[in-house]
Amino acid sequence: MDPADPIELCYARDWTDGLPVVPPTRRRVAAMLAGRPEDAVVAVLPPSGAEATFELLAANAVMAGCRPEYFPVLIAAVRAAADPAFNLESVLTTVHSQWPLLLVNGPVVERLGFATGANALAGGARANATLGRAFSLVLRNVAGGREGGLEPKTLGHPGRFSFCIAEAPSTWTPHHVERGFSPPTSTVTLFAADAPLCLAVLHAQRAEQVLGTIADALPIAGTYSLAFGGEVLIAMSPEHATLCAPLSKAEVRAWLFERGRRRVGSLQGLGILEAAALLARREPLTDPDALVGPVRSPTSLHLIVTGGEVGGYSAIYFCSGRSVCVPIEEALDGGGRAG
Picture (cartoon, rainbow, N blue to C red):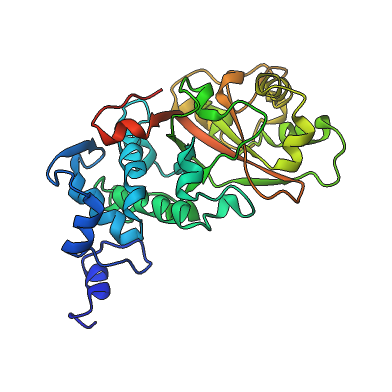
């Protein structure tokens, strides 16, 4: 290793996620801070209990390749992660593969150029890719979520590098408005999510074909959601959303909740349903005709539209625990609330 090479120095200090990073020079960090007080604490992050200062967040944003105008989004995401309702410590320290997914909503999506067209879930735009990576670097370098340490995940998934998507405009009520925010507000929602499961419904002619395929995939035997409940985020392509547009989001959720369950008898000996009873210290489900699904209420099914105009594909994310939605604008003035 060349000790004079700043990129290699970042590797030597274990600041990276395995990929090269932009060296966080004083000049670059100052440009990211844009006058914010570097020692001010944005949040205290479990499981390390470390203080996430503006300076630390700016350094990780620089390393990820963020532009300064992206920084308020990262600030909001870190505040959401610190909300006890999100339970970041559990998300990072479980052996399960989940990782925090950032969902960005509102005018900031277009203003900062987030990807909402083709490859929307792949993070191809700079805003998606660098913000998702910056947040993961913060979890690594500040919260303590790193391999061999406080993060013992058996497999993990590639979202650990960058896991950030955005909702495209549609005829449906936007996600952040459903969470209680006004349309002009921009928000970040954190989900503790598995990798997306892509579903193909090609040449569909009716909403029932799309929704029936999604419902069939919801009660998969091996998901934590089926055993413990949680939330599901459904990313529907424009082609599928057009077919389902006559229905409201509430009607879609109700349809999927009723049909996205299966008999306990068909799950016996499969997945983690029986082991979950031991882990949760509760009585196992014994009625073979009882129905179980990945959510306990239709309101825990979240629906967004994103992706390319061509192609009959949608995706579902199985999510543990509870998601938290934070306004981006309030991250600028030290306020903020989660919902």
